[in-house]
Length: 220
Image (cartoon, rainbow, N blue to C red; front, top):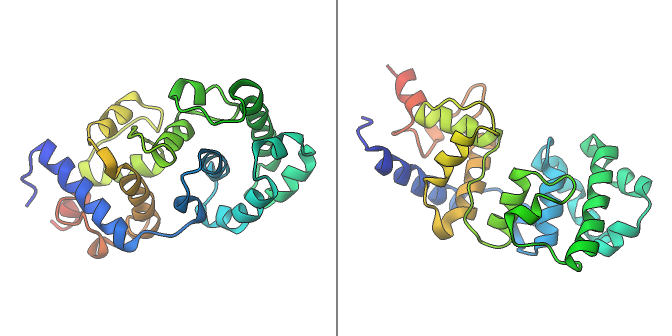
């Protein structure tokens, strides 16, 4: 039965997701690095595509553009050709090159460690900036995307007006993740990709099945 207080429920959800991820989480190359530049590039590539698609090109891309200087000086068509399998390659290429130029010209080649500075980089919005802080700098920050919105609706029965809804960001901040932030957010992503599918969710395999409102109501 679902009898937890809101705070206790968030704690249970947090701990269950982290534990599940540590055993079942997917292994992608950008998850094994804390290099801020590499994490930034990964998050920019991951927008509006799948992790599987990015995994096919990421290592070659980072080998070719190991430093922002290399990315900034490369012909835009070359960049686009390397990421064409992701779609929107011309837009992505422009954002990547402009971001690299800004990193060089405004931040001496280093990735800023402040949210407001990260969001000034071309192609870097609220989500990517927060992802860099969480995954590269180990700074716990609320992180909201379509995966988060989906899982919070299923588990808590909460409805938000998309990933830009300030209420969603406030809710995620209330989880008090501390040093569990990386495993938690990667766990949310992987749970939605592998278990909490939008169609035909695998509830019997889910670590949240005993506290998930959607599962409990479906079982009635």
